[in-house]
Length: 118
Image 1 (cartoon, rainbow, N blue to C red):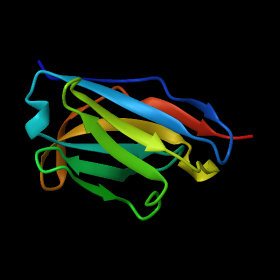
Image 2 (image 1 turned 90 degrees about the vertical axis):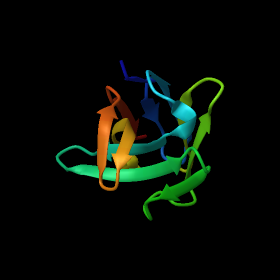
Image 3 (image 1 turned 135 degrees about the vertical axis):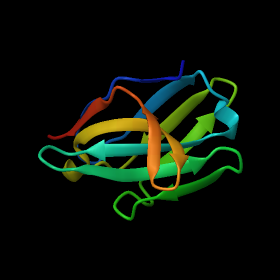
Image 4 (image 1 turned 30 degrees about the horizontal axis):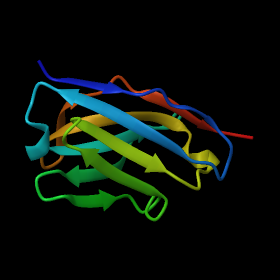
């Protein structure tokens, strides 16, 4: 059974940092492609970042490029998202997701709330 379990998010002041983690099980993590997707209040899903774990290639939305870093620890089967220089517009529920191929995801984490506010 595939499981994706995210760490707790939190409340962070603008300019602050937060690291999200996503513990994966039930599939060969080191050969997977994984993504972070977020949903801001009242808005649709927004792709944030992806990593092709098998070739260690990373991709970012323009809105987070230079501030967020996606990474993995294959020994722990864990996906991370390091978020720096957080802005109020980064406030959202963040989901980790396992990619199933172009344009889709087949498994999702439970979601974790990140609130950026003073």
